[in-house]
Length: 496
Ligand code: GLU
Image (tube, rainbow, N blue to C red):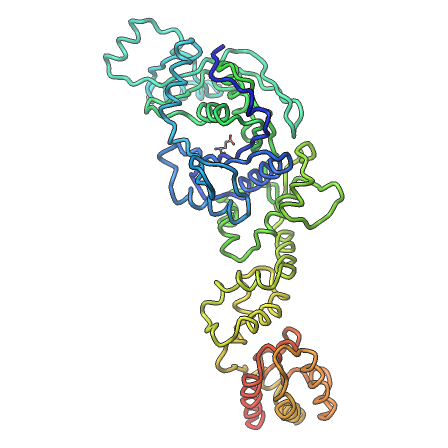
């Protein structure tokens, strides 16, 4: 056994991490894993850490790193430490530790747990081809295990650059008690042969760097997607060789759509990324609430909870073993709920970026809030606010010919509009109930009810036959807009 370091003091603290590879934007599945790790840490007064597994230099991109950081922060999943002192912390990055991985690999070589393998990519491709022709699963044949000193010298003289491989003894049963899935057994013969831990380019592979980091960072639990189960088996062998007690493991079921297809960018487009939801006006509170309950039921079956409330109740043992099903309708339902229930100030500020086509300065802050209070009742995401709020900002209301015929063509329409013009002039801002009472009074006097009463007014004020509560619309538009719109519609009435 090779003793890398002692794990005594800090082992006692619960420490978990999310370790995304910045080879794409923050995926919903990664966000869910991050969330469960975060909840676990908060529930146990432990630490939650972000570590970017960015050693794949060809596929890793800084823009993805930034997207992951922004997405996690947007969801409220802030991490508790980083390479610098003081928050908000930058993440840890594996690329900052390449030399360290090399040193640990060298220790494994000197203790004969690992060796240099000189097989070229062409030779490995030929091996794969041969195995596939024989109908065998592809695996490394451990050919580099017992090279003689002369073999090494010959390959070096040929200019071959070796990779470092870790010995996977076969057969042996690797097992662990998974906190979500229970006892898991993997046979080492199914792991594809001796494992590359450092590529010939000198870069540590995922399975190796992750173990070195989980040791260095004193992780107490590794919680990730179940697609990593075979990696966990490989990593357990590495922990053993390094003489370190492994953390606990928990593997969450993958996320599928309603047709049992795995959630992927290829099949589902941009809406597998958190960023798409951020841009489309989803509330982070809704995404968090939806993702939390996707594979976990709170003890009291409550439907709505904040991150803090979920953290108080979270129990990893209660996370479901069965695949999670992503249901966009249910997410929309949560989102509509949060848009209506979050403080109006918050929703108004979040709605502003969707209203940049309008001259917002024509309304005061309080008036804009009144508009959002009306519009938020009818949307499931903030990107819809623009269309629903447009009539508040229009210089002039376009009333289609069809609506003119339907709403403005009979005698009572002009009576209704005239009545409103004379009576609505002194409705103060915010008095929706007063506006509504006046409309009823106008109706009585013009002997117009229902459609006959409301349609001419809605057509005049909004250019639509239906819409949100009329009293609220009148009081939010303000007297001068109401007056000019009623006059314009009355002119059309006369024309018709
Ligand atoms: N980097 C891995 C991924 O993005 C996660 C590895 C882990 O959590 O150990 O899938």
